[in-house]
Image (cartoon, rainbow over the protein chains, first blue to last red):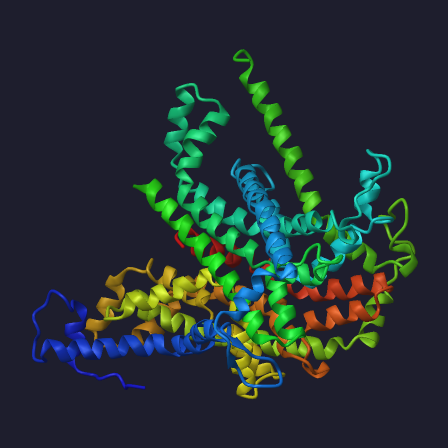
Length: 317
Length: 279
């Protein structure tokens, strides 16, 4: 876009733009040049980002206020889509299921990943290998993972129920083919896949806990549990905050895992918000109505993030 | 209890090892099952009790899959996409990160806040307007759509910015005094110094594009455009009784990622840790 201007006054001025008095060039034109150069760095990425992310986010709100299907142009209908949501049973189911998934997936994933990180932090032999193993599910594709788990969960001959059969007699969970067990099955797979990622974040956080603090607590007679509760956890707060925000967003937007594992079924037992957006938009071509559901998802994620952010701020103060 | 602390300590460590080994076995079980089943005859996949060692070993599955499924096309498309997206993401991401980390100009802070803000916005919430837009440009049902979709993510900017900030400013200031332009500093000083972060970003972007399911699902209709994830999913639907072959396809779809991960594991871990330490 702009070619860099070469000249000694420019390079000299750049070194300390705020403290040094201007040399030969007036300070303002220097600042303008500086800003232009800065913008050229950001522009290639920002153009893509603005057009492909920011613009769609903004148009989302407009589309949600229109009636728009595959046959015609968008027509302004005001809040009609949102009033329709209030009485839509499928939407209520999707909303409820999303919160069901989040309510279990968030605490279980945090506990499991923190547990794994603490285990790895014990400097055992083979810890590096174990880290590889625990992280591996996170980077494998959802399709392969879903089809394997569906076979493992297979009610009659699947290895999981065969294993459970050693301990209990009859009344086996039906997992993905049962209305009651489909959601727990999906949550198990979701946790198994995601926990390795958050384990790495916790592990990085644990490296920042000062060893002397632990030593001091030990000398004062604190047991392992007390040290964890009074030393490790408080030091981990920044990591915990970041992990909680990320897990929460991830849980509320859960989609591809459910799409390939259960497709929302059986019935609507695992239908979640993201999938409802997909069904309304890409299967029934009700773009306006689907966008209204998307607006709900958008506000849930934003609200949850802001609340956690404010809570963290208050604790910090 | 206080009398024999070392014995207690040792049994504690043994317990930790047992926990670690059990957890590792549990986590790996699905992959073990995947590989074992891919080497079985179809009617041996589901047996009671589970047959843990395939007998006879069916290497045939690994030949048959190439005939029954259009694997070559899928792998080719996925490779094209992964490479293109990775190149774009690494170049534009590190370029923008230089602006954010090493330069000071009006508008920088609010701009960066915009990037951060989108972390909380799930793609699922704006996939419809985005689809409308790309369709109106005639990009629906083309590989271009997926490239655009993936290439300008905020992730690359974060990761590189985080790393650039750990490079002392004195280096770039010295280069400035020597008359190097900002672009020269980025290319000749900062880029060579940030090879580990570039490696992290390259690997992470490549893997996530390879694994992407939703983007291709929405945009790629023609069979010739399918990626490995879409192809595998349709194969599962088509041959839903061929359990062994399905597992063979799954192994093949995971294998390249597993290799990349094992070779570049260090960069993976560092990349995740860098973005996580301070949002």
